[in-house]
Image 1 (tube, rainbow, N blue to C red):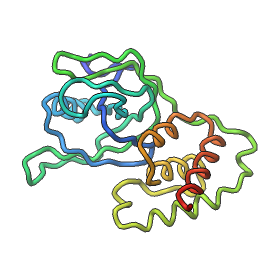
Image 2 (image 1 turned 60 degrees about the vertical axis):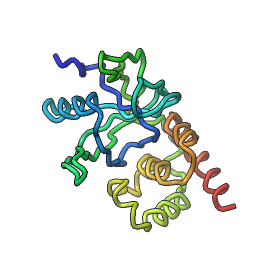
Image 3 (image 1 turned 135 degrees about the vertical axis):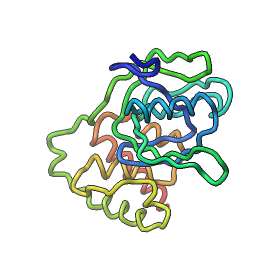
Image 4 (image 1 turned 90 degrees about the vertical axis):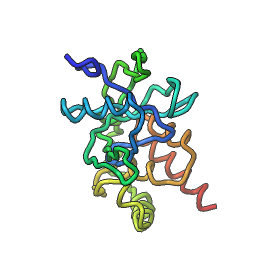
Length: 200
């Protein structure tokens, strides 16, 4: 059994950013604990959990984190021109982390509960989210966007909400609050409020 992974425990990668399911993020890996993590992930075909830092920094001492993050997998890697390891990760689903602990080198692990889907109101199937789809399509026109998200399923309310949550230019604490919402209708309402505020 891996020291980093089990059926219910996963390694954590605390960051100053939030990543939603269906979205990607490039990372430069240079700390030994994270080089060990990526090597183990590639060897054992495992992912890890990206989670937002609540206190502390990405580099150095073990930080404090929020409890809701995203389980990610490494989808690409390369040696960068600066000699560092570059990896691209893709978020698969939301997770809740409990009982976090740090290993000798500071690498964190935690008990992981998969939050695979949002609770959905049965009436939601008839809700028109054309306004959200239109906003998302506008955001996707920006040239740097294609590296942040996978192809969007506009017929999927969850996928549209996840991609919008990722791409809207709002504070990371607001993004974290969106990630923590368990009800699709509530997330739609929150996204509409944010879009209205940005338009003002």
